[in-house]
Image (cartoon, rainbow, N blue to C red; front, side):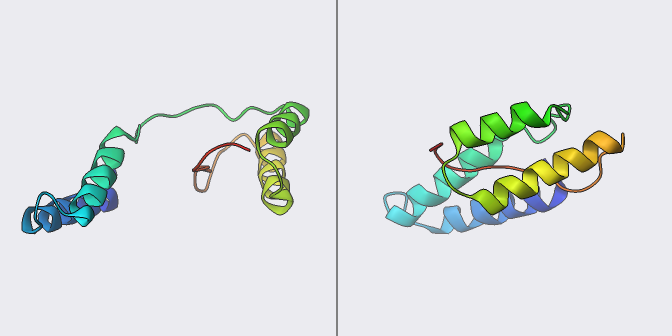
Length: 97
């Protein structure tokens, strides 16, 4: 877990200790901490360079969001031209569709 995430998790844990265990906010904080622990922080994957396949997956799995999908394809196109990955990870959150 990165340093910033660890600090945030510890702060949330301290906040949780001060709450009533049965409160709605405590339930939310516990869920957040559980999520942070389950994230595969050190997992890495290769950037797939097949732009047509990426376009197909984006169009099939994610309705709308055309500007976002265009930006992702642009990122992948740049990465296919240079063999060095720099920058942040792209994470989508929520249900598909």
